[in-house]
Image (cartoon, rainbow, N blue to C red; front, side):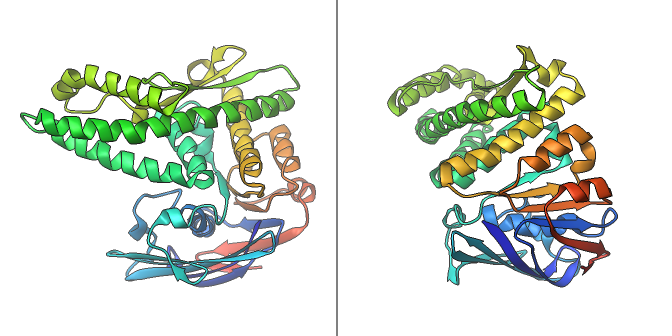
Length: 363
């Protein structure tokens, strides 16, 4: 799978941009705040229909403009894919191969993309929300029903929390939201548990190779709802937990139980490196997780994901850089950097190099 070309109109700092890409390596060089990451952001939109940088689509509209348009062309297994998007402050329209789609879930499974940026190096040590986003971003791509369940769960959670903020929440209405919360939340929990087991198996092998067998990485799913074998058992235990926490939820005016509180326990040689790991251990674990993400997409979909490396190579030492590059022979790469050493360039397969300066791109 690879992105062949893009066309942007009034997107971020680009008035109009058309680029054609190499099927293997595309290096995008330029100083900070010139528009390198904006190109990666536009590519990522073809996968999940939303940005990896902001939750507000209108932030991507060029200053003083009313809307942006983009067109992304891709290829996979001799199939051509075209994603078009038009976004204003009031609306968002998406087309897949010329057909207007009603739900973003219809876009999923078209293009598989993994982003690795300096922010991802914080997956291990910072707040649980980052680790939940890591899970969600991957699962939404490979399991469209997960995207549907997650969207519905978030809506129900918002409704339940709104009700809890009332001075005297109506218990009968609360019970309705409880059952909805349990229905979608139970599916999310089981899918996350299955996903983490697979990621743990793959990432532990990668980590072992990077550290020459000195360290054993273990990823474990942490939920305040016990994970069960079947969906029916999961619904039962989840509903029981929700009922038991109702009084506390009313007092705190917030939902305390459910997958929105999930986390990942990340340990090396039995030590929780979220709290006690060195920066080197945390970065190696983050690299292992990202490479595992790519490998799992391949296992689940038989497609090679596209990797966007956003100013991250400079954050890795030479050994980790080499491991990353050598692991990606079948992957289309987009690499942004302020500069790149000849040593790194030589280690990469042949490709294209673009230079970005204040929204202008040359090759």
